[in-house]
Length: 283
Image (cartoon, rainbow, N blue to C red; front, side):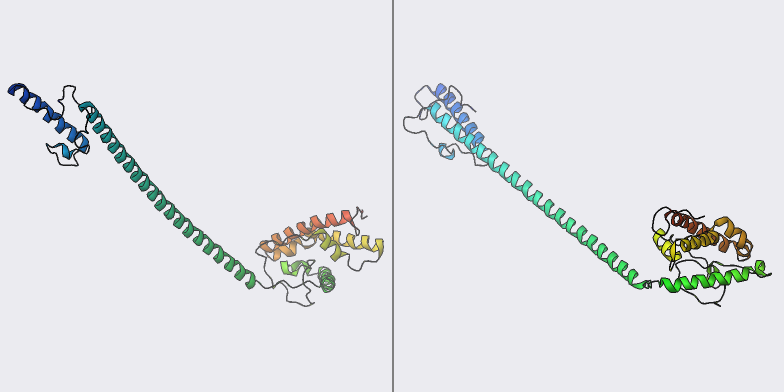
């Protein structure tokens, strides 16, 4: 705020007429009061004395305009300082709030990480417990399994030759499946149920090695593969044992025929590769 252009210099009083002096003094008093109020911003007590103003009395040789300019500069400097301090305090508050938010976010992330790690540890413990609870699958003795396979097929062929064969129910567990643990002749018939899940098909190599175990020469290989082809051909198997499978129940019948088709598909790959893994035709 610029001081009024007609402000009287300091010490000017009573030199003029009483009316003019009173009017000039009133204007000067009002100017001083406005200057002090503007400068103090309501923070300092207003006084009629120059001493209350930060700039104090004019310096020796300082004109009223110079004194007013100096007061104005000091007022502006004070305002700028207040603004700077306020901005610094505001920025400090923002930084403190950001730090609090970052700390809260870090704590939240830490809790989530701990929860996920706890879930992962629990899952690992359950998985290990489930693995330990499952009994280990014994290693298959292929030689004994092959001997049992041939023995059970001989038994099944003997039953098929009897007159009452068609009246005897045939169950899933009665079929001499390849690559299964050995069983003895005279085992209780129909003692096993249908598997809850179809077994996985054997690999071409494992089925080939099982069927050709102990084969002597190419002619023996062809003879053995021809026998297995006749055994596991779906149409021939159904024609030979269909009525007995139906007597054992539709669930038994469907499970048996499904696995027969599965074995027949793998067997066709064995027939295509032969004993050495190359293409071989079986006549």
